[in-house]
Amino acid sequence: MSQGANGASRNGWEPVIAAFLCNWCSYAGADLAGSSRLGYPANIRVVRVPCSGRVNPLFVLDCFKKGFDGVLVAGCHPGDCHYAKGNYYARRRLPLLRDFLGYLGIEPERVRIDWVSASESGRFAQVVQELTEEVRALGPLGWRLSLQDWSECGRVER
Amino acid sequence: MAAQPARLVRMRAGGEMSDVQTRMREAAARLLTDKGVSLVLGYTAGSIPFRTVPAFVDKPEDVERLVWNRFCTNNLAVYLPRLAAKGRVAIVAKGCDARAMTVLMQEHQVLRERVVVLGMPCAGLVDVRRLAYKVHLRDVWNIVEAEGELRIGTPGGERRVPLAEVLLEECGSCAYHTPPFADEMLGEAGVILPAGQASLAAKPLAGPSADRLAAWQAHLERCLRCYACRAACPACYCRTCFADKPAPRFVSKTNRLEETWMFHAGRAFHLAGRCVECGACERACPAHIPLTALTRALSQMVHDRFDFVAGIDPAAVPALGTFRDTDPEPTEH
Image 1 (cartoon, each protein chain N blue to C red):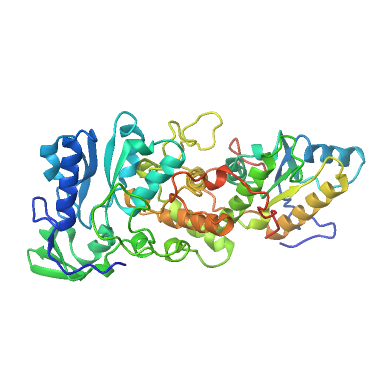
Image 2: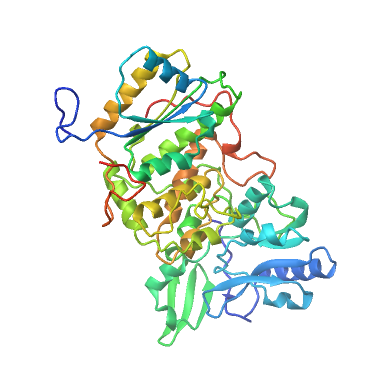
């Protein structure tokens, strides 16, 4: 994937990344990053969930099905979960899903599971920056398209 | 694989009986007569020599229908949640079937006291698709097993095929020939290898990601969405499958590749730590999609990450239903 000087790809493709952020920690951290005017790539689409343990693996699969290039799931640090143990379940099932996606041919680098607390605005910006650059380097997901049009409802607009 | 003493075993309906088959019929008759069970779940001869079909025997005089041979491939545990809900059921169980039943017990779909497990010493089953490469299936009049080969009577005379060449691939890497527990064991126990070795020989698709994605897309393109895989699988017992729920809609009914991918990826992940690699899904698939490759890869990952094998201990908690403080952090790649 060729890159221009500002990091954008030459043919204008920009990664589209879904970000599942838990209400109590990572979403608040993202909010703080915004209020503090820290810059981070605008490639993420945020979905606020009550807890990283709420993230059904089917959500992640659904994102890739719909054409997202990457997925971020960010929750509270282990031990700090607002619901005590939700992130522990996420810590089991989401890395397993990432490995499984690797087996299916979707690079595991497209899925990032991380812990960002409400005060870690700088860290949030950094995580998004890193993931965006990784996914940009990987390029768009190589689905062999069916003959139908991309612009049907439910698909990511390009 | 356990070495079988050489003996002639006819596998046609109404043929001579093997020791194990006789003992199985006697046990079934006894259980039905003593009112220990109201139903015996087993196999009976199909309409052709290399097929059996599930049998539901509720009268002692009908136990002669029950057979045991190398074509008893169905996973009978799929019937247990409904059948064992009302009364006690005896099940003719191979190792894989009994492990599937154990998964159902772990998930409280089947009560242990409602099932009488008749443990069968399985030494591998025949893959009819592989057999079809050796002989025209329509020419098969009868099949006899002797000295490690199948002797097939055809119009053109007898054909001999080494068993090793027609065994199911799952059987070749099975470490659980006999059930982890049984109320009655009906034959000599098979060799059990330590878990994680031969049991979970995943079939990784080698090569870069893009090739793997394309390879799986090529396989899944053949899918008709008949859901035979789901119907055959004992672990798929949800009253409304995620693929059929309109809200949230994860899988559309249209036969687009991405929807089919979503169904198979979702179903495989729902089987993480629950699939016992019996192969029923792949055998049921009319499009010959290598479904066990998906689930076996995931079983290997579950074993490597959580040191867990599905369906061994009925009191165990499923791998994704629990966690440890010492679980590894989601480190990058």
